[in-house]
Length: 262
Image (cartoon, rainbow, N blue to C red; front, top):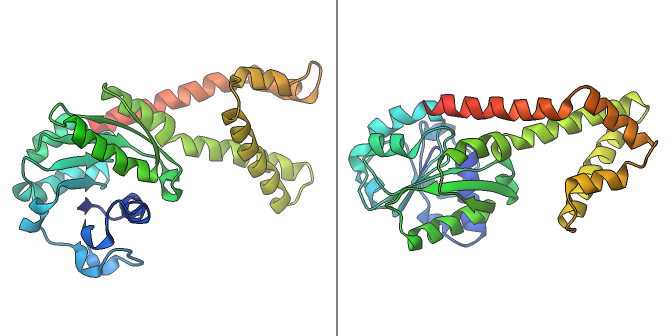
């Protein structure tokens, strides 16, 4: 059962089905307004907008609503949930303690996926309550891995850190790419040429780094020959404290994740 059938809720449903981990007829979703739902990959009769006893029949329930909507949802569904059900949360900032208090469930897995989960290239960091045993944790991780890769952490605080790194991280990448595209067009390339230049540069660089044992620092040295063009660009980055700005930005995102949880 998936509570909240927006982008992330549908991503999980589609990933479960495409990996053949769960059959489409076994996936149910709880939504605010059934009439607004379109392009559903699960049977229409499996989309619910009124709580009922059926909520307690599922082994795993997924919380895919916005953090600010959780308390209202909890009040609606908590009477129907059972102690033996596993709760997988993908809500930013909402702690396992809060989820347990609001829902009355003790088997909780808290995770932070990112938007590339939509194409099976996601990165998810997750943690679990002490009530989750190894077998259950293995099942949950297999579910999560249908959307990409995952890291399990014992320290729940690292979930907020992951929100700031991998959760928000794609936006940082798009921001940098967009700046490079603007620079390319300013130098005379067409929009389509600029996008191809930048997109392929990013993809190639990541693949190159993944294919080797060299650190990012070593790759920078390989590209930046002494007195060359790359060295000039890096000097501008250093003069404008770009690295420090990025670190400060991630810290600000982490602080916001903590605020959402409180």
